[in-house]
Length: 115
Image (cartoon, rainbow, N blue to C red; front, side):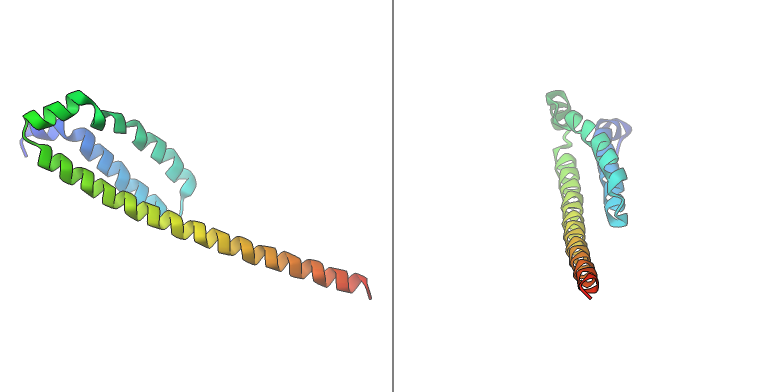
């Protein structure tokens, strides 16, 4: 890819790189850092939707590269969503288990106090 095209598509590549980093954080379950990095990534989104950027991509005949890059990012986002949903389900299950344990402790203590 020529340097000028590479420079033109740099915002797309940066957004993709940040998406890969977010996926790694999601895999690690580091949701606090994920949230920080997500805000940083989203700040770069506006460049990808600016009219001048899109016109420059079209004039450079790079629409296919842009389309593919966006599709790749969407695939990463889908994986992130899946991991977030799994994490949410696990947290919910852990919370229910904790609540049941707490009820069991309370019942035991109530029974013990009644003796």
